[in-house]
Image (cartoon, rainbow, N blue to C red; front, side, top):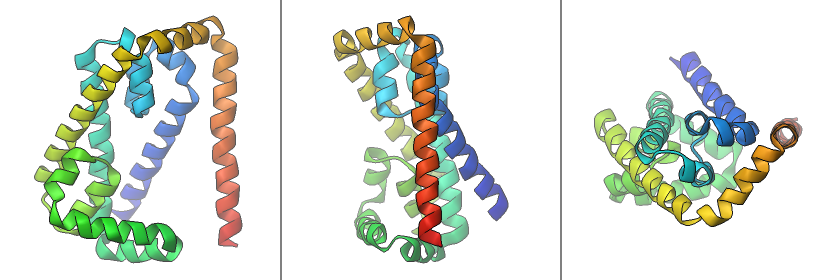
Length: 198
């Protein structure tokens, strides 16, 4: 189970990075593929004006749910022990996570709907919430947030339409620049992490 979870986390990271790297071409020609790879709010807002709402919300919420399923299983597999390991690696962030964990235990269903994602799903598993409740509430939360971001995208169309038009006119150059920036950032971040571990 541990190896499968590591692979699943790696796949999630890889597809999110790939989606971010290919934003220009995907936003212009394959918006639902972009959302399936990387459903960040800014991507939903960018493609909303030229993408039907129901398919976009469905894809975004299912992609978000996939991340929650993986995070829940990580929390269930590693449990509180995972939090201890996390604290050792990043004490500053761990303090925030511990504080959030205390708040979460008081109002888990509300957090799962209002703030769906890997952190709340992991905490739900660690604190003993059921899979069905966690995944159901997370899915509802993602659908709500995707719908809100879609409406924001509609409202911002006068500003996002010129961006999409620019990307379409300079698709190759924009794609190359975006890919270099994303993969370059990931490489630099990886080098920094490796230096800290030495």
